[in-house]
Amino acid sequence: MAIFIASTKPISRSNGQSAVASASYRAGCELEDKRYGKTHDYSKRHGVMSADIILPSALKEQGASIERSELWNLAEESETRKNSRVAREWIINLPHELDENTRKELAHKFTQSLADKFGVIADCAIHKPTAREIERGADARNFHAHIMLTTRKAELGEKGKITLTDKSDCELSDTQRKAKGLSRAKTEVTEIRELWECIANEKLAEYNHDLIDSRSYAAQGIDITPQDKMGSVATKLERDKYERELKKAEQAAKQGKVYEIDETPATIRGEVNRLIAQRNSEAWSAQLTDNQKMNDAADAIIINGHDIKQTTPSPQMIGGDQPPKPSTKAAAVDETTKASTPDAPKRKAPSPTDIAAAMALAMNVRKELADDEKQKEIALEQQRQREIAEQNRREQAERERIEQQRADRERAQQQERQAQAERLERENKQFTADKKQMYGSVLAHAADKDIRGVDKTKPAGTAILAISAANEVMHKLNDYINELRTTQTQRELAEVERSNLTDLVSDKSKQALSEIKNLYRTDDRKTHTEALQTALNDFVGNHSKTADKTQQQALQSAQRDVTSFSNEINRSRGFGMGM
Image 1: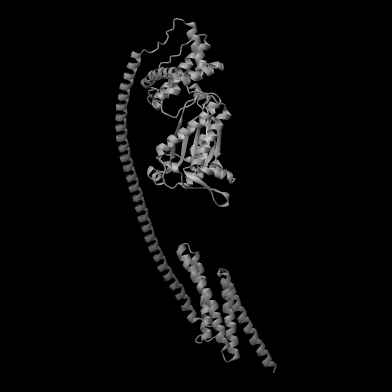
Image 2 (image 1 turned 90 degrees about the vertical axis):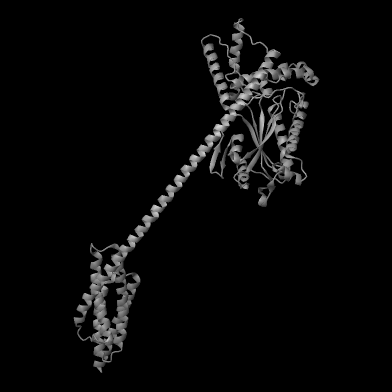
């Protein structure tokens, strides 16, 4: 018969969860998580029968649609807190008595009801147990659906794009729900469980199957004892033993021998849960005997030609996790073994005294396990505190190391800047002294230099001598730049000085030409013009290559002006002689 499972839990960042990763795992597909910059690929996952996005009816009517990747990245983007709930999940068990299409129809109907009730978007993935899970003891009838809901309401925004707005009612606190006139969250969960009961029972009744009940076993009057949680360690021990027993049976079968698989649990918790499951099985059988509805269902199945065992829940479905049971192949070997060995011991059904002793043992074991868990929690907390202290110490040491490195770098940089400043100052002083020496030697020679017909005391003569001196200084600067002892800084300073001298020659050429034009006698103008032209041409011929383009254009312009004035003087003299 079908069992009732309808439970809910949040998917929260505080638990290290991501809506994109969760959707990728449940749908068995590849999704890119834009918030964390990761790609989750579960496309090779087995057991996923279908996965569908279900919109609220209001959005469907407007023709809206959204892809899975866009939906759950939008859900992550809509939440800003580091501990936000990014999705909510409902898990429901789908009746194994129904076919695949009918189970899918039920899951989608329930999902659509949730989407319409809260105005959210849902992602419904239907799973079945895989062959590997069944080999390890999982119930082959465990068909179920994972329904992920957005925590915020979905609306159609601009350009027909879906947006997530306010938190849905199911995510509100009881205080907020009370302010809106809603029942408590616990009551709403009960109502949703009853909704699934109603939806599933309509279809089960249609096909004349036993109905499910959302109430607890206690509320139904069924005396079922809950089993202990096995935990990862005990579960692994049970599975390992099962694998070993299965291999022994397979090896015996290959050798033509028989081997009876040892079904005894490997752990104390497994043994306690086995005894509890036996007790629950008897309680369930008694309930079936007393419950006329169950008898009617059993009669109906017998009339329809089905095996009555199909209506009896397995201990796994009643009591929770069980030690793994042998696969079909191993079970066949087991049955062959029992049939061929009549003297093999048979398991005796537990008497009321045995059950009472088992329950007492279970209580003692639970108490011991609780004490052990408490001691483990204390030890883990102490270990955690030590690890936190050690982590803090390491972080403090790392901060101090980084701070010391930063201080050392700053001190080294400061020393480097200071040394560089001192070096630049020394090189500047040296260049100033070298420049003074260059100018001094040239000017001393220029004072004794005699240019025929040029009056060195007049402004025109002074400007011509300055151009001639600049030509000599430029030669010395070029030699200075090419010397090996000259530093890069001094070369740069010499190049700047050379550029300044080039500009000076252009200015002095214009000044000299202007003064020459003011001379009274034509012979004086001619003599000074020839001297200026000679000095300027010498400078341009020697140093125009080191000038930039603008300076070259200025020098050429000065040459043209001087040549033009010289031609003008010669024409005027020729005209006068002709007269």
